[in-house]
Amino acid sequence: MSGLTFTLFNEPTQRLDLSPLTPQKLVGYGKAEIEKMELGGGRERVKVGDCFRVSGSNAETIVFEGGSRFLDRIGADMNGGTIRVTGDAGAMLGRRMAVGSIVVDGSAGPYAGSQMSDGRVEIKGDAGDFAGGPMAGEMRGMSGGTLIIRGRAGDRLADRMRRGLLAVLGGCGDYAGSRMIAGTIVVAGEAGRLPGYLMRRGSILLDQPPQELSPTFIASGPWFSAFASLLDRHLINEGIFDSPFLGEGPMRYVGDNAVPGKGELVISARQV
Image 1: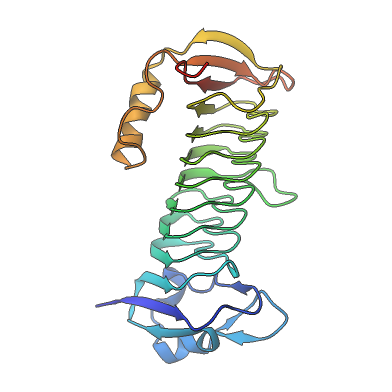
Image 2: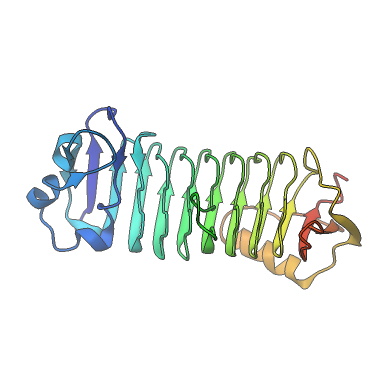
């Protein structure tokens, strides 16, 4: 039984909310019924059949062929199954997802993995601002699961993160881990200004010094932790890295003492 496939006809002329097209919401629906579903997000009323050619029948495996930055909320509130996007995705990819797997072959817009509580999201390109973070007015960001960004992430990565693992392989913008409550952030490549800004707990691991380190973080010497070897093993098993991330003797900084916080910022000693 082939997966349920949505092939994009043309680049959309308005933003499309694809949150209705998740495995749990499409189980039991036939092709004709799916094509008649309306997609919000813009001023005009648009149906699935106006934008996509629908094929396949297995709703547990969904494929979007031909991506676009206008395709918002892919996998939002997802609680099972798999989604693959063979192109770019728009804003709020995997927002509030609880179970399942999403893979995007291209890049994604802002708020990827926003408030996700479990599952796995992998973006092979770049991600916009507030990846793993909350929307305006919300008090928590990502609270579980794994979010992998193989390109570069924007500003405010994992803002208000509460739990989970977020790994970025191509560097990130300013204020990574801002207002972080708990969880683990791993960044390979150049990080912007003031990572860990106002963080209370949690761990941020960098393989090189950021553009600017806040003076409210205090150096506490080399980082020796059993957590390091366990994390390295997990990152390798997940296919995120091929070898240990930080190597020998990374340096640890404690903060943000402006809060005051009890988080840690760990930077590879090879680059300090």
